[in-house]
Image (tube, rainbow, N blue to C red; front, side, top):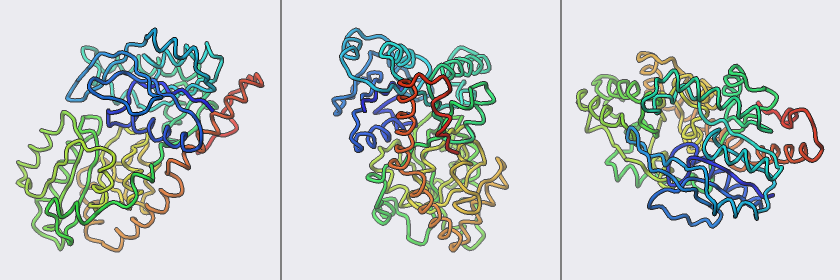
Length: 404
């Protein structure tokens, strides 16, 4: 099968869509398929993959987050696409290169698959000069129209299926397929060397956050909770708790200020924006993954943390609640400082419960959330869409393969 993936966000950008595209690309190629990636150019970055084709772009940075903006036209790429054999086109966005994906799907007479990655109402603050409510209204309406004109819509989790169905996307078109964990990358993390490097003793309990450090990830709320836990001087394990966090964004300095004011800086390790290869050692060094985001369609870091055996304490919210099974692989709590604090303390103080949740997380993630398992589901969508085109079916091609 020859698959063309159009994405506005790709390597070396470290965020969710890039990770999703790359996870599926690798596994599709391992399964013997040919994958072309059409993405914006990223100044200073050179692709090693010969099947990545870059559209010209404008280098854009907002709130310390860099997102090259694709210019959705290239005569050179158009000539290339004319020659390429393509069986299915998979768009990751409804605009910019999403327009090209739609155009070429029509021109090649092949299925258009669309992945709805983003809860647009939670990300409207990234649009400069336009009121957030207006930006969200336009983005949702635009994505809904695009989705309803696609052959099938992929969402990372069932809770997102419910949300976009309520927004007006035809429910029979929607299939839930999470992005899987690449086992070749995240197995066998080195716990000892990472803890030694950070000066963390074996008997200390490490809380971990890997995230973009921006408003929609709710990181300042999390920082307040963690600072409170670290500053406490009573309790059997209170003095043994430390916190590691990694990622980049405009809330980094706010978080550092919170830790400084609480007097817990010596218990904090900030690791910056690390690459995927290094994350397995960061997960291995930790004991509990903490997460407060309310804007997730999945939260790929949750899947990675679970695969690495970390129990999770998280705010109960879309995406995350589909991955974390409350009282089985972690604790889902309200967005309330007291509730979140008590959830973390419960796992800090109860080693047997931590181990139980850890074992469950490893087992469940390997059963449901590896890249191989998830890619097999995606291939069924592609095959059904291609068959539907050939047979000129009038009903949505994905209705038979809906997975919850």
